[in-house]
Length: 281
Image (cartoon, rainbow, N blue to C red; front, side, top):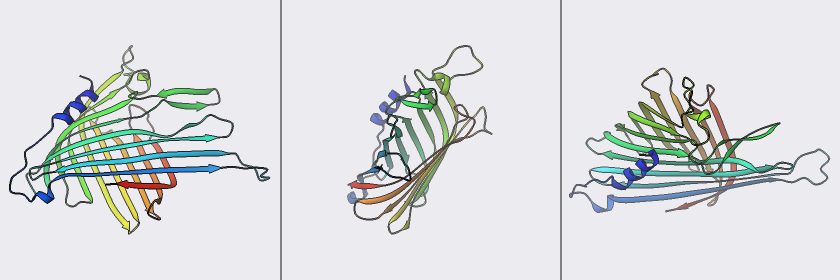
């Protein structure tokens, strides 16, 4: 079965029974959707100091659905990001592109420490290119690669701002046209388009207010294959958001990514943007 079909089926069948003696106003679904649109433009006309016309835009959305019951918590997160940029004299290029889904089912057996099962998926919307003096080379696409994990273990959440989990994990990487870059085993003669790794995962979430109008959120994901515990894959996402007015905000997005099977060097991405933020509740 394809891993993304497994994730879909898992999300559809996961359910649990709540205890009867619980206040109804504290149970049920809590939903939140936050959308952010950022745009920037540079325009020069007879500007003697020089410069190039350019524009850039990005759209980000964060959707959370949490089903809180007496016996369990089912938390679902969907993060979407896409953006384009263009400098005069060149075609528009991607500035941001990500689809990330996470579903975590936690059974409540203790106050802070509880068992969980989780599934996650990560991919992108459209083709990605690497640019050089010779032109552009296509290096990625939708589900090419796609990263999927299924895990189970124990989670710890002492308060609403911090939570972490640790457990055994099965990680799949799938490709279609770009197996050489993401899934190929260099020791074989064929190009593999599918890689499965059994290992351990750790996921830590932090969500705190640094000031009345400044919010910092962080997600640190670590994975280590049991065949090489001394090498750890890292996906660390940080977002610092400052609310200037009811709609206007300043956002700083920083991402550190490392996967030894893709590149021996860590990958970095950062975005500083001013734009419109709207919350749907």
